[in-house]
Length: 376
Image 1 (cartoon, rainbow, N blue to C red):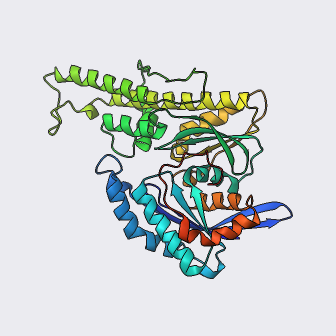
Image 2: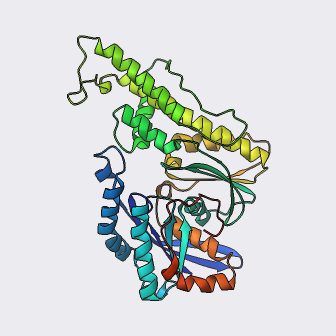
Image 3: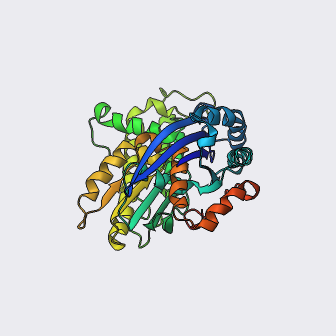
């Protein structure tokens, strides 16, 4: 089976061909193409994603990206899969309408896919989970825990009540003047900390909701704590006659205080990691899961991957940890194709036949309740 995946939920225009073969109950996956056009250079100028700009870039890139991904004749494609949500409505619209057009012209079945399920499903092309499993999705827009009883059967048990973990990284980086995207910038500074500053950091940031009796998350308090620390340092430096000021904001330049930035970055990163790991392992024990599945852009954080791998070994019952390769952590279309396959094999014949008319029916839906609707 060959699936064409299309992904435009935010600021990456992506298309991918995924080939799936099954022999004697053994699945094998081959990524025939994986094309991603990133918009980071554009949005970094503004310190974050501008939805209107993102949509305009998708319009420019969608046809070249799909063309480049077509390493085979379109007649060999068995299914087209496209992200319909959650995400930015103007970005989603470009991908959905493009997929509908291709499905009509090529007379192919079309499958709508929940973007978040893609972040989980990408793990399955490398390793199969043992069920029941627990999925943790951590990205710029989402931080969620879901109980997964079997392929395509999810039940959300926790989510962020305010900022997502990736959003917290971005906002803290902006407060420190480190640019966008914030996650890689903070990680870079945090990893420099031990080599540039030999003294122990005295900064202790909160771990919001780390001991709450539920599986929800909250990262706005962490961001606020950093804000007040930054304001405090700026106030003290403003009183110094040798302080250099930013010409635009007339405030002290934080980049002149490398020790402070390094300590803040390391502590912010560790605070987020502590909350994510403790909540996830607590849920794993309560629900007696056999696998923990990670997904999302923040999972590319090396320290998070290392600490997760170490902490999971300390659980009483053995739990399999599935972590996607680094290249599949950010948004991509291979994960959409993978999610489509595992949805497809659980559909009835009638449901499969109905896919042929989806080019008339499906619409972009940025407000999908993530991981709650099993048919997505």
